[in-house]
Amino acid sequence: MSPPSVLARAPAKINLALHVGPVRGDGYHELATVYEAIDVYDEVRATPRNDPAVSVETVDPAGWPVVGVGADADHLAVRAAAALRRQCGVETGVHLHVRKDIPVAAGLAGGSADAAAALVACAALWGLGLDRPELLDVAAGLGSDVPFALVGGTAVGTGRGERVQPLPAAPATTWVLVTSTPGLSTPAVYARTDSMRAGHDLPAAGFDGETPAGDVLLADLLAAVRSGDADRIATGLHNDLQPAATRLRPGLAGVLAAGRAAGALAGLVSGSGPSLLLLVRGDAHAAAVATAVTSAATGALAGVRVRTVHGTGTGAAVVDDPPARLGGG
Ligand code: C5P
Image 1 (spheres, rainbow, N blue to C red):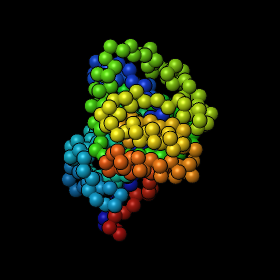
Image 2: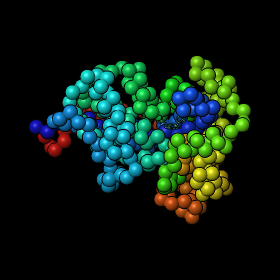
Image 3: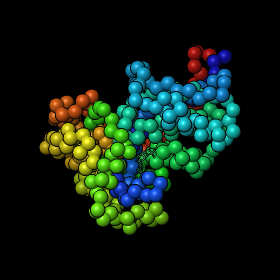
Image 4: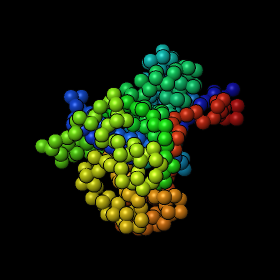
């Protein structure tokens, strides 16, 4: 009989606000951010192996191998499965088949989505029965954005981003997402941000993990998110990494300007870039803006893809339950 397998998926994230504090002793930056999950997903199918190894294969939605993700031991999905095995004393190995729709090194936390989907798939495959806090703990050890990829929806992130407080209100946002290649290195964008802000006073007082909802930096945006009003959300969007990302990839600024000229409510760089987000009123508005920015983007950037995406309430979850059986067994 073919072995059982478990399929899970996890969403990409965007940051409606990303306030970056001073660099900490451990090299990370203290953040105050509002995450939103969008309806672009990576899927991970976990299948038991006959040996104790953890292996991975990564393909795009058309089934072609994806370049630019880490080799086996560096792949975040592999690190997630390995961490779970260690934590729970699991002895069997697992093969992870990752289907990536989230572009690599794009500022959309695709690697974190792979890790979160792998955690959920392996926990189900191995029948670990972990509760959410235990899974969030493992997730935080894997990367700053992994806990949010588990939770999804809309959430405040503090600490280095790993302390996540879900928000009850998930506004029905629609965005034109402009992705391009090559990716940008997240550490390089943070480092450039530090050098561009050297000597400036940073609002460290706002980075209070205990009372993030009252955080002065996020207050306006959180009120806008509660209202669900796209015009108010547009005025609250903010990304401290944007100046560095647009410096490192000069073509981005012109595409943002083209989006605003085409009637988008607002535009910003997604996380550490180079993906761009244009907030629109709905799908019809998105289609009009997408047409206008496509020509600007293809003139200024390489590997351009323009698509309409939406905020989503989902986080990482098993897709087919009970587990599917491969090979018709
Ligand atoms: O946590 P993660 O591995 O995703 O972070 C990748 C890199 O991004 C870190 O090595 C660091 O350079 C940068 N980073 C940061 N401050 C954060 C999150 C990430 O400096 N809060």
